[in-house]
Amino acid sequence: MALKFWFCFFLIAFAFSASQSRLLPPPERRALVDSAREAIKESLRRKEMAENWYHVDRVSPGGPDPKHH
Image (cartoon, rainbow, N blue to C red; front, side, top):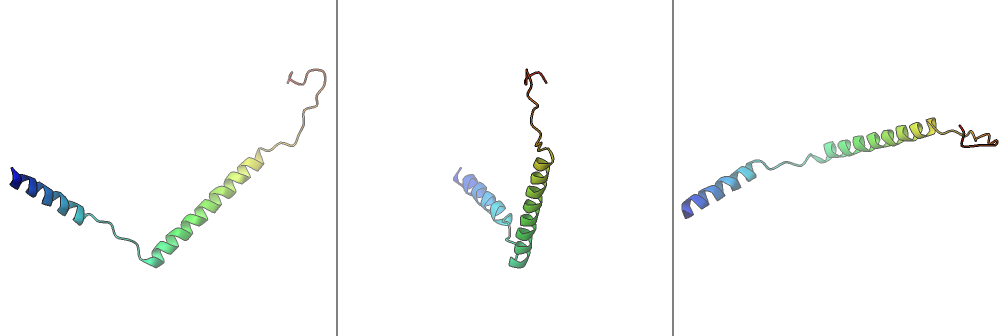
C-alpha cells in the first residue's frame, strides 16, 4: 500500500515539475506590457467617444404636460 502511495506521489510530482511555465525574457515582457497599455488606452478612448456620441444637449420644450412625449 505504501509503495503505491509513493509511486503515485512521485508520478504527480514529476508531472508538475515537467509542466512548469517559463517567464518571458525582459524585452519581450516589456513589449507585451506596452502593447497591453496601448490596447487599454484605445479601448478607453473608444468608450469615451461612444459616450460623447450619444450625449444630447437638447432640453425638453416643457409645455403643459412635459411627460407627454
